[in-house]
Length: 400
Image (cartoon, rainbow, N blue to C red; front, side, top):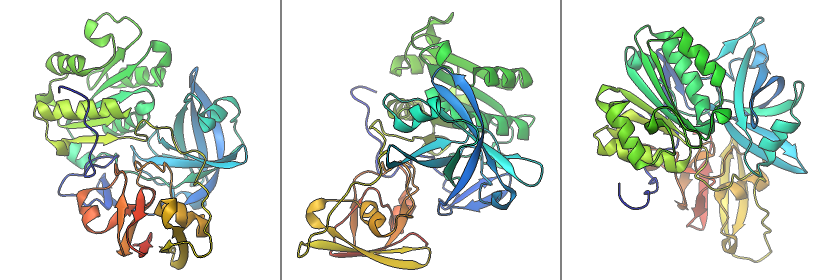
């Protein structure tokens, strides 16, 4: 693939490309079909904080019995966490790193892994101050980076992950290997050094449990491995060598990719070039490489007499109206939050799809889209965090 990496286009979603036979509004596993539901926050208590590396922790939440149905999730899904730090609301999305775990009394637990980002307000706080007993608003699970276990029974599944991209892979690998005695899982996991490998002991335990069906390839960019192909950064040349010698695409039924934008895009392009059909490549991003929007919506003032768009919002059966100054160039979500602070959102970067809504009247243009499928776009769905009005009046519905 000569030249610079091509950016993901608008017809691709951040979580995974759904097979043609599956609705983009549903997720299927173990024969269950779960319709995509609008995300809602509930306050959960942190029950455990476990250190994974020097800059990563696993945070476990206790889910009471009366909320168990709200947090019945599928391996590979994610949640958004909401806290107030330094006088501002902060939201961050994290993959659930373990399959659903019920507890006695009808409750459950769910766990996420938080890796410290340089300058990251929430991740730094989680590393240094978060302890059991803290209460945090946790969004109900979202996302479609999931496995149809009936389809993958007996399959060879490959996961390629970098850094904290391992978190959904942990849940997926455990679930797939446990559900079938014939499914094989190969993991290609890249980090800077052994000290940076999250879930190192958990991966080793999983390998001991499934020695013939789980294959682990650790690629370290700043540490020498015995095999030269596993030493150094994964670039196009190294990836092609791996596909020629370690992981033969012809033997693989499904691919899961999770990591930085550049790595995921590289893998997608190379896999496509060696003949892997797009519908068998599922991928997940939580950022596109830009700094996450941790500080919430920007402030916009509406001055009397100023030309403005009229935005009508339907949410939880209630209609609200807000004006958005034309010169402000703000997103539909940014405007909506002035009158409906409960409007759903997480990443604010066009990646997670939490802010999805349908345009019923009027028109908008989207700056970025890494989360909606073509059929959703055709039916009028948009990411409100990336949508800007192009008509004097628009009506958006979060409920449909």
